[in-house]
Image (tube, rainbow, N blue to C red; front, side):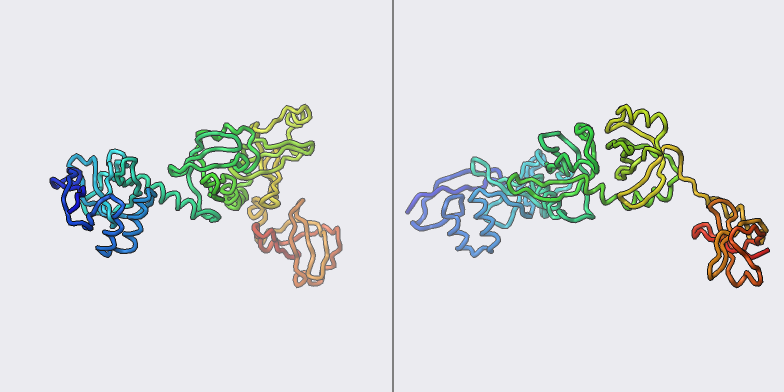
Length: 379
């Protein structure tokens, strides 16, 4: 006979236990936290996953898994979780999210992170499992240009920022905090922004995120909105100055140039005196959208579209005077006013002998403002 220690449960409460010593035949193996636990697993032919989980626990390696709630104390301060391994883990509910604890019931499956305490107790943490799941979700989104996460900029540090993404501490380089170089790095601290994960630093075990990548994805939408409302005044801030004009950022992610010729006299004087600096607020209108990366701005007023209201001014069957500006193989172009011309198709010219510069009366046929086209006949 040999003496061994075993733990017995004294009531329905799995925490109500006592360690006793028993005399057993030599060679008998008991379920315990001792080193011979692997032999017991083999004896009961547990699954490979159960053996793996047990080994991780005995090696003090944390891991996330799912388990069944087998017990909840009457005061809902603690619970036991069966993770299909040798060990039943204890979960201290006072440390877990309240909204989850309120929904917990015996028999429910739940994600937990298993770890071993200093005194050898097996502990299950719901909150740590949530963090692991969120971390995986963020890491899986690296390189995906369609996924962004809400983040809080917590702290400015050397080289960038610590940002909180769903409770996960991530690093954002200062150069990726905006579309253009930030004029005041402290201005982001405490703000809520959208970021995209771009890489994972193995050395620092940290996800690197970028606000700039998110802003870039917004550009096509903002360009469309700008084109639709090009006559509206804009307010932005200066991002840089040159002798040719002032660069300004606006509508979150767009950057344009206000050429010197498009600045007000007051702003020209400020430019010459170097009184304009990055971060200054500035007002302007969009003058021309050349591309996503090239927008011309102006402080002298909104873009004037000569075709606005032309369909109200010139209506079908109306006879007006115009000047022939061009003769082609398919007809004659007639200017009704500066910037507004129409075409008399060759089939409508009949015997009319027109030359450039002739002033004639024409009858309006159709007016298409969106296509900038007016058809007409010789009156």
